[in-house]
Amino acid sequence: MISYTVVFGILMVAVFLVLSLYFLTGRGGFLIAGYNTLPKAQKEKYDEKALCQSMGRFLLVATVMVAVLYYGIYIQNNLLIYITVACMVLSIFGYIYYMNKGGGSRFLKK
Image (cartoon, rainbow, N blue to C red; front, side, top):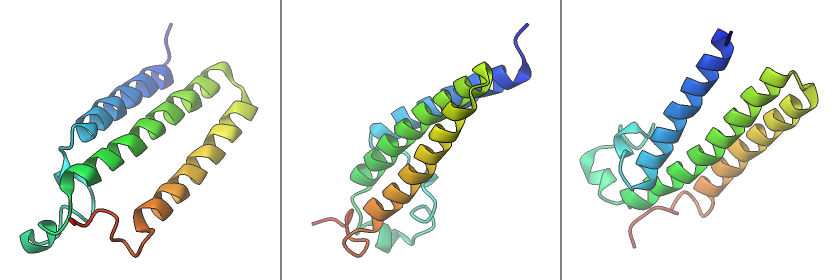
């Protein structure tokens, strides 16, 4: 019998995968916090496609890590869980640094 945790993990990974593929197509700016609340005049200064693709790459990495995390939970391997959580935290800080490097002008239209 499959537990609810396994079903939830599979659904979560599937949703993340669909969202990451959607972002990778260059669409979905309305789902990015901060960007979606900007006035239209401010949004026109940003390259929405590049921003969405960057978000899609990050979300794809997060999807893989969530899948590994749930696998670690399923096989009850604490070392795998700890390593995956550490990688998740490091990738989040790395992505925040990447997004803000250069004074936050990475995705401004040139």
